[in-house]
Image 1: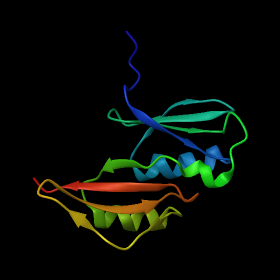
Image 2: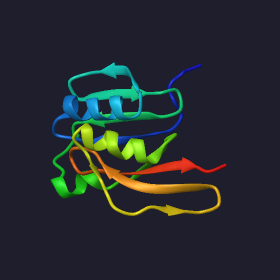
Image 3: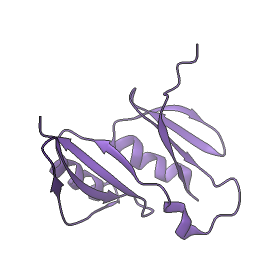
Length: 118
């Protein structure tokens, strides 16, 4: 039986090494596998594969997937994203279960941060 995570996200990037450092440090991920074409990271719950585009993709389409990731403290996570070269956007929304806010990685890919309230 294969032990690879059953869910995750692929993030296309022209600079896979630099962008993988953001995801590794932002979400406490470990290096699972690295090749010339991709860097695979995981934390036991999620797999992020930072991948060179397999075909020519216009850069505005690199950001065609938005992932969400649960964090313990959304305020601290937003600050950390900025320190790692990303961005934190204004606004926060909530429902009875969790609150959300948005950040971007250094290449502009948007990520929703979820902080559970219960």
